[in-house]
Image (cartoon, rainbow, N blue to C red; front, side):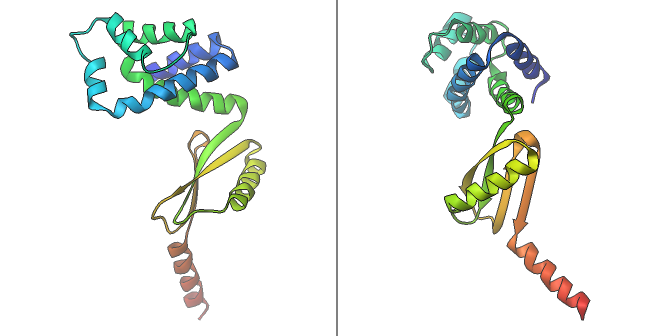
Length: 175
């Protein structure tokens, strides 16, 4: 995370109300996936386009008539800071989560976890951290369960392989 992005986020939080911040975050999150596209990057980094053309191009990626959002995008373009937009979105999301005491995390598992089980885990973590926590199930090849809540700096894992090793070690130590 760049220090410059953090400074922009700090200024945004001081000048915009919660609804405006949430709207801005939604707009930024709609633009961020484009940063994975090489053509998009070549356009915003092009020295052949004017700053006005770059701004217009970015405006075409979202629907909003909010002048504050447009001015923010223009400010990034004018200062040649468009490349930090994903960092701004990420930091703004983290800061809003902290401010509102609401966090979103991932429940990583080898197979789909039932909604009731996810809810129980959310309730347990919410009471543990005294915050509202929502989890999204991400099915991967992970053999066990892992909870990641990046904005809280939390990673909790239960690997079935590691659990088997610990049980075997305990049995061996008891003999």
